[in-house]
Each structure stands twice: as C-alpha cells, then as structure tokens.
Amino acid sequence: MTFLLVLGREPKISLAELEAIFSSSKVKQLSSQLALVTAHSIPLDRLGGTIKAAQIIDEPIQDYLSNLPAGKITLGISDYSDHANPRKTWELALKYKNMLRRHGRNVRLVPNGKSPILTSAASHHNQLGEKTNHIEIVKYGKHTGISVGTQNITAYAKRDQARPARDAFVGMLPPKLAQILINLASEGAKSGTILDPFCGTGVILQESVLMGYSAYGTDISEKMIQYSQKNLDWITNRTPRLQKNSAPNLYLEEGDATNHSWKAATPSFIASEIYLGHPLSSPPADIKLKQLQQDAKELLTAFLKNIAKQIPSGAQLALAIPAWKRPDGSYSGVNILDEIDKLGYNAIKYRYASYDDLLYYREDQIVARQIIVLRKK
Ligand SMILES: C[S@@+](CC[C@H](N)C(=O)[O-])C[C@H]1O[C@@H](n2cnc3c(N)ncnc32)[C@H](O)[C@@H]1O
Image (tube, rainbow, N blue to C red):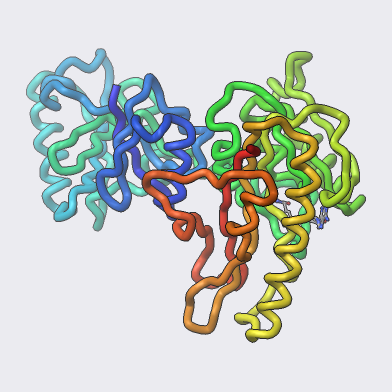
C-alpha cells in the first residue's frame, strides 16, 4: 500500500525518521511538506515527525465514497496541492456531500475555514480517519488518499505537560523529538533496550516504554534519577499495559556517562540528549561560544570513548547535541564529525537529509539541538 504522509515542523528530520523506519527505498519526498511511503501500515502514534497519514486510493473518490458502510458520514478535505484554495476545497466538499445525499446518505462536512487544509486539531477532534465513516480526503496534485489518522496532539501535550517532576533548568525534550531519536537509533526494531545515559527527567525513557522497549536511564545527578523514577511511575500508573508482567523493564541508576559501566542490562540502542549547557538568552560572544563548543565536545568525546567499549559492533546511537545561535541567525555546533571515525563509529547518512538539515530548534531558541546518528564499527 502507498501512503501520503504530511511531515512535521522539521520536514527533513521527519524524512530521516521515515527512512530509518521504512528504509530509503520505500520513502519518496513529494514536496517540502509531503512524502509517499510504501508500507503495510503507518504507526502514527510512534512517529514523532509525521502529522498525518492517508492511504492512496486507486478507484475514483466518488466510487470510494459511494461504497462506504451504512450510517452517517463525517467528511473533510485537506488539499496540500501547490495552488490549492480554500473556496475550491469547500466547493469540492459540497459536491461530494450533494452526491452522497442523492444516494440517500446523511453527511456532515467539517469546515476548512480560511485554509484548504484542515488543522490537526480539527481532524483529530472529528476523529477523521480514526472511526468508521469519519473520512478525510487528502489531496496533493494527482494523488488522492483517505486519512488513516492524525497525530494525537492532545496525548503528546499531556505526556509533556502533566509529568509530575519537571526541571526548567534541565529543559525537557519534547516527546515527539524523543520518539524521533528512538526511531533513528532503533530503526523500527520491535524490541530491545534503549539506553539514555543523560536521562534527565526521563522523557526518552518514558517514550521508550510506551513504544514497547525496555529502558535504561543513567544520569550524573541523583536528583534527575529521582525525577525520572517519579515520572516513570506516573506514566506506568496511567497506562494499564505498562502494569502487566510482560511490560518492558526499566533500569535507573546514577552514573557519569564518561566513565560509567552499564551492567544492569545490555543496551541495544542508545537515544539521548546530552547535556546542552546553561540556557542562554542571547547568542554567545565568540570567546564564550568557543568555550561552550569545547566543553560539549569534551563531554561527547569522553562519553563516546567510554561507551564504545561496552556496545557491540553495529549498535546505533541517535544523539541530540547542542548548536548555538549566532548573531546572524545561523547556528554553530560541535565539530565532532572528524573525530567520529577515530572514536570507532560511522555517521549514518540519509538520502533526504544532510547533517546540517538535522537541526531541531524554534526561532526564539539560542541553543538548538543538532541530531547525529552513529553506528559502532
Ligand atoms: C539536556 S539534559 C537531558 C534532558 C532529558 N532529555 C529530559 O528530557 O529531561 C542533560 C542531562 O545530562 C546530565 N549530565 C550532565 N553531565 C553528565 C555526565 N557527565 N554524565 C551523565 N549525565 C550528565 C544532567 O544532569 C542532565 O540531567
């Protein structure tokens, strides 16, 4: 089956995630915001970088709609075509509604307002693609698909904001980015243990257990281990499948990533956001930037050296490392790629995303996250 996927705010990072999960040959970029993927299904609740998925249909849309099972129909249209226009999209929706009415069907249209695209909130709220006869037609040029669902923004927000132990100073990774790092490291493997050696408040550990992996978190700070424990107890208490005997294992211990021995379990994959340094309110001056880059490089190098001795050949690491905003708006990161080879790793390359594309930030952020994916030689 072929699916039309709507990519997230950082489309290149989303593409890298899709390549990791489905392999490059199954992914084709269609536009800056869209991709086609050949797959049996799209696991939307575990793809941090994909907003919406629609299954491409071959039959004419009128035939598809005429053959829907009995009962009321809720219908919406999102047209991602380059010159799509809200009025025409609405007229098309009315045309389908009238056609269905002539067939005796009861139809409710989801208004698209001033945009040819339904917002994620509208799609999700109306359960388009998630319930029988709740249909969203997704168009791009000659491609037409039927939505199989939209990212559950409410669930992400709850997992992010309702966690009991939070630390503004450490800064928490958005759950979507945690999923992306896990996917880049594990490439869709169905099981295994995800290690986060800089686990902080435990966002990556939380997303790992929700995705069915065992999770192993270590951090130099005892307080952070307590926070992770508290947050993981919280997610376990509100997720029945995590309370079963067959639930994924969780290991937590204090440890300095530059010299720790991870003995509680064998890590299959490493997904982590390393220490990003102090939060900054304006771009650092040149001297300060050099110092920050050097500190981050020392920490990263020492960690990579230490863990290289403890993981098997082929083990993969997806790391978020810092990059700092310059006064001209560009970002300057940690110069690590030259050392990777000497440290015993290869950097993974993606077809649709270069190293520089894997930068995750918001316009107002001084410290951005550069994603690097490494494989132990
Ligand atoms: C950027 S935070 C990770 C945040 C985490 N992803 C989260 O969402 O909460 C980095 C963490 O690295 C820890 N850290 C700093 N230096 C470390 C070291 N040498 N070894 C292990 N952890 C370290 C800090 O205590 C902090 O919790």
